[in-house]
Length: 249
Image (cartoon, rainbow, N blue to C red):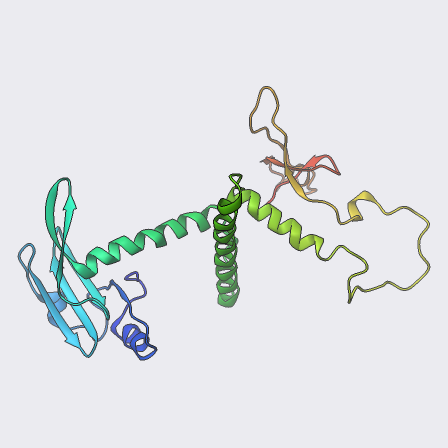
């Protein structure tokens, strides 16, 4: 757990729910031992304080490291680094190993994160973050399943586009239960192409000169407000309308 979230109160609540945790902690957190902030230690010295199952550790490495743990005790682990054996706190070693997965998750979600704009309502932000993780988890499951049966994998961007198309197509069939039927005389005029509900973003095909060609966004370049008119180049187009469009205007 990152120091932004960890605190003695949180860890004790997790223990009550039979959940262990380990993570860095800020030395000025409430309920931490008073000597955590003031104690002066020589290099590789450490102090540990205990409260029931919770351990608070202060260790002087290159700088001071403050840890909370409900699982690891004040023991050490020998690790190999540059052909040299180094003694390191077990809780710190395990924390560094497992936090790599968190960093990778942050990288994967940041590339195509849904909540790009600042949201005023906190619950909307929570929903968007949970949706991001749900999509990322489904992509990881897709990769595991596909690697067992095939060597061809979609990228995360291709997977997200396929997911959007799949969700949209579920609501395009007029025969689906619950479909609202409009009253009145049916029109003899053909349905305009823009109302056919079959518009999906597609990559602009590569040309002989450009591997990733772009075109000017139709909406951005045709806005009536001259002040806000901005030239935006996009890699996506609507193949039915034959116009380029920004995916995130």
